[in-house]
Length: 200
Length: 280
Image 1 (cartoon, each protein chain N blue to C red):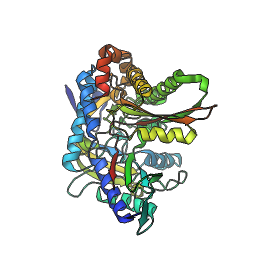
Image 2 (cartoon, each protein chain N blue to C red; image 1 turned 180 degrees about the vertical axis):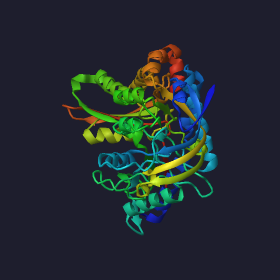
Image 3 (spheres, chains in turn brown, yellow; image 1 turned 90 degrees about the horizontal axis):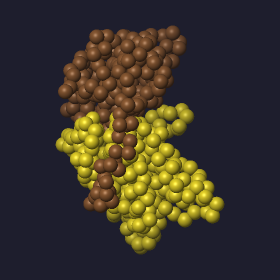
Image 4 (cartoon, chains in turn red, purple; image 1 turned 60 degrees about the horizontal axis):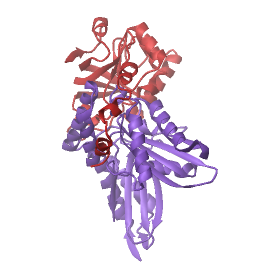
């Protein structure tokens, strides 16, 4: 049921992933969100290098809670990917192979994914404590002054993800909801059942 | 007259913000389980299972349910016999939040200015609302409000002639446009009437209500059911990946309004829907 994959992601790994696949990802991933992406974009605009070699890497859109003493990581679920859409195509063009976040992406991002053979994974939004338990180590790599918005290197083990958009552009956010349109009324066919769902 | 020392408020605020972040409300958990049992999408069932399992992990490990521990919203209902002593009430509330976010290992997600965006480092300032009511108690209701869902909220100044159909259309449009971004399944707070800002405040207060009690007024209770049905018929599903569980509940609050107006506000919250209260 789950495909086990490890980073760095090779093209043959990515070609074997289809929208809807459940995966367990292990290895090194990098996290960054709004502020760090802005810094990286500004660096590129000025012709400067990125803080990391981004080729074949996976970017996780997240900003964590601080870790309780004795724990490796605090709650560490995904943030809304859409806010990083502006920055994704240029990073993919530089060799970024995977992105992890939550929510749909723009057409520009999907086109960049097809062009660059990159994949987009959805981590389940809100399961911060669950995801923290899959993190084996974390290290701030750059932009430490940004706090929870720093560029952080994570080592994860069996992080559960869903392939939301594959490298051919198949997109669960577009295909799945259509199948369930008006299904709720079919399931809750009478008023008594509806009340049961609403009230105790 | 009753004197209440602000230190008690500070400690209570601290306790409430930590607990609201660590422990999923029972009524929300019950709803998630109900929907998981009737959900028809396989992916949706797996997602709901992990959401429920996450709540157990958070409680067991004494950590926040979600890393977005929110901007701190506080509602104080102060009995008019009460006199706060021992300091400034606003400072006491912010001090309680500062302590909660430090001692609870919660994320500091507040920037001091919306343009310069420097992180304040302690999750203050809070957004605080005060109401004066009869009596001598202080009711404290808190909500760590995450912004994935907050960003998907909306408000519209409808015309009276738009009527209830106009209201339904705006609520559906707001939830449909939000799609996967607010971390469905969501809870939808709707404020109808008042003024521009009153409608928004009612929509937020609606999210303080439990999800298994409809509005006291039968007309609004039926409208809540109608909206819930129509939202779930959109098929957006958990995390926007399809299913019948797009919203766990719709809560409506209504107020008097002007003869020329019909303000409608939609405040969305996610399945964490953190809120807690205590009466001093």
